[in-house]
Length: 202
Image 1 (cartoon, rainbow, N blue to C red):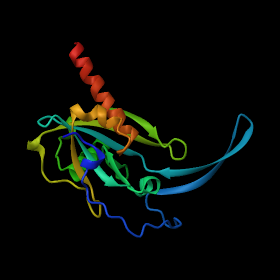
Image 2 (cartoon, helix red, strand yellow; image 1 turned 180 degrees about the vertical axis):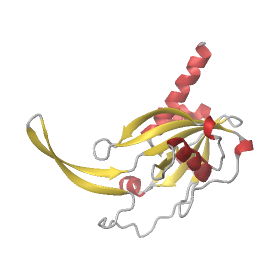
Image 3 (tube, rainbow, N blue to C red; image 1 turned 135 degrees about the vertical axis):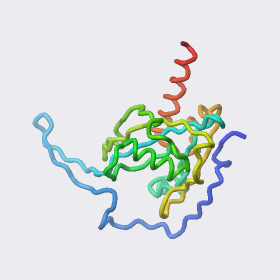
Image 4 (cartoon, rainbow, N blue to C red; image 1 turned 90 degrees about the vertical axis):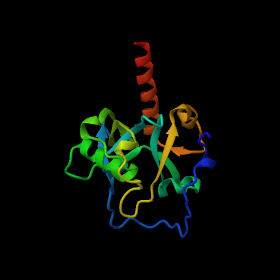
């Protein structure tokens, strides 16, 4: 069965959704920047946010990508659903290497214990450049059932659903606009496809 919006079954009952002024932020701060560009005075509103890591996880036995589905309040404002499908990811807020943070996120969100040396850096890029400009570093990891140590789902109050998307459905998934997803996820899928095309050409 192919993955469609209707086939994503995560329970998601949202009530009493209210916007409030941000008085004591935990993860971001806002500011107005003033500067001169080529002699012209300008100003801009920005959000200062943590950098992050994201991991494309490929399950070798299932021939599938391991993804996460979760509720995003900012997306809910726009589509009144709020459920997104994303790469496993996390913010850089610990005194650890990026690879160590990636390893932790894989275990916490998806339930796989991946050796540090098996986490491969793909590249890094800037996100939300119009207002935030935080940097995300993208990694790749392969897993199988011998690495599974838990059901995942996140920590604390996180409610994360782990999804296995068959590789053969990835192309259709990328262009299915009914499913909210991130640009980083789509880029990661295309990177994986190009990587395997190169292998076949050799």
